[in-house]
Length: 354
Ligand SMILES: C[S@@+](CC[C@H](N)C(=O)[O-])C[C@H]1O[C@@H](n2cnc3c(N)ncnc32)[C@H](O)[C@@H]1O
Image (tube, rainbow, N blue to C red; front, side):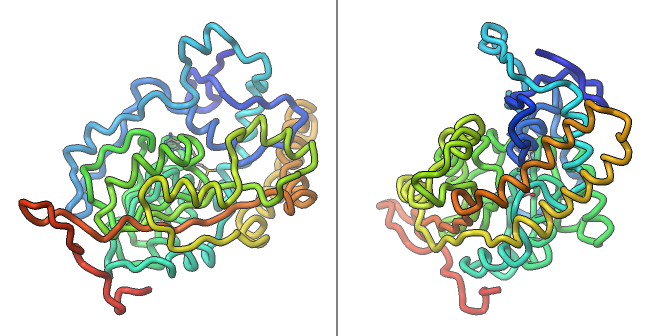
């Protein structure tokens, strides 16, 4: 099924299997956003760029085939559970107004950063940044350069404004591009960060893709949804089977980190307030506002019910699933001579700790 995005008019196809029964969630946001950039969409290249990054490569950074774009398989097997066109317009009206599009907060970002041993001004890549809640934390908590990437243009536009308002444009670069096809040369980053976005391309694939972009000794910090219980209630199992069938528990992700030749530095579960303060509470407030705006519009109210059901679902079932932050490190070794002797590039100093 195809339709046009209400604001851009671009033809889009959504991959979300919303059927009006299950709560909508951040995964829908990610999928819907991925669908918002039609074929031929070009990443914008900032006019100035962090020292040491390859501006030439970025010019050719593709958005690539995103989740929302039609494929031949889609044409052969149309998804009959696609949500109504109306759903997405309202969904964006809710999600784009939030300070962030998934669970997380400044304290968790600071805690994950605390597990890293970074240089004093690290070069950071924030993947699937959304409106940039964590991008701004990273800019505040480090004095480094941050490249923030998302393939949904409206959130990148919003982040540019936020960055400019805070006088951070000289070291934060929001970009529209596809995180599945990073265009950076190898070993450019001290830290690759991603909150709630890597599942879009699969955690293992993501780690394999991003590890080479890290300098030896560089860090990869990401959050993702995990099971907290082996035997969740059937309604929870059913929801995640639709939305995230490959979701594992924290130990599964730890195993993936090991398989990708990264050293785990630590992991922790996001606390309840990381779900509520900047995400579900503003979401419920926004849903309430839009209920007034759409008071006479039954279809819109039904969508708002569906979106508003997610926080309640989490409230009831948070013992079954959660978000886990993982911090890993590429081994601090590199080839230095004809014999490919492996020596540390630069061991982080105690003074580097933030
Ligand atoms: C659940 S949101 C998380 C946003 C933000 N990191 C946060 O925690 O608030 C996931 C984000 O990933 C982005 N995304 C999904 N697939 C992407 C892709 N292939 N390339 C770039 N961004 C993508 C979505 O547009 C969305 O903004």
